[in-house]
Image 1 (cartoon, rainbow, N blue to C red):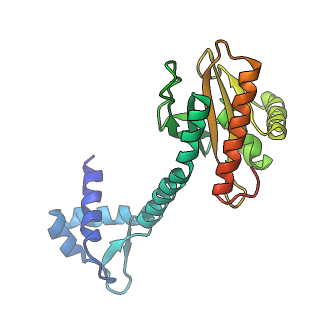
Image 2 (image 1 turned 120 degrees about the vertical axis):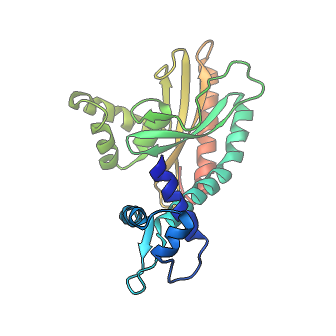
Length: 246
């Protein structure tokens, strides 16, 4: 924790200086109240991580571009969710169920947003930030099914034994053809999920929208309605993000 505190102290000190030439190590030592030997080791480690850059001419230090990259990623994520959230709220109201937005992250997905229906007393509650292995659940299967097969295969190889790959890939082909995925009790017994993939303006799968319901008394007609509404929402969201097709 001490190293993190010291690194953030250096970052804060550098952030207060806008001069292109940066800040000298002696000034940083004074501002952060650290021995020069400690500051030297800390700056070396921060440079290695892209957190700090050193001007070759002046030998002074400034913030690295990694902070800009992270900031832009966070901003993009916030803007991305703000565009989608109204559609998630609309879907939740229409179907009277909990609605989720998930995003792929390597061999896992992350739940970025959840909208709970105020009229539904029985809810499926999955925390924001929850990570789920990509081979589990309707949302993840919808995303895998719509990724390039080479990309989805890399993910699957990291999660499944070799003998299960072929059958799982057949399932993904069926999901892609249908345009939606369904799962029953894969994470939570007695629950069903319906999901569709979302694409951006480059045609890349960037997320999935899913509806979580309690399986008890779930009729075929109700399921058809959930599928219809999920697919409509997925299409609208993809179009909002610049995609020509869902």
